[in-house]
Length: 43
Image (cartoon, rainbow, N blue to C red):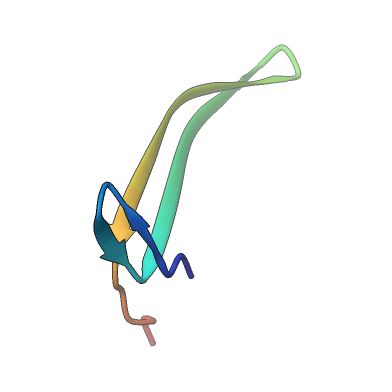
């Protein structure tokens, strides 16, 4: 749950998706996507 304003727009939820790889026992972050909105739980 986010329940805050971001850039003067109110968002109920925030999702984060991280794209990464593991090389030589180290985790490398490639990119991070952030989504704001409202989602219902999948059943």
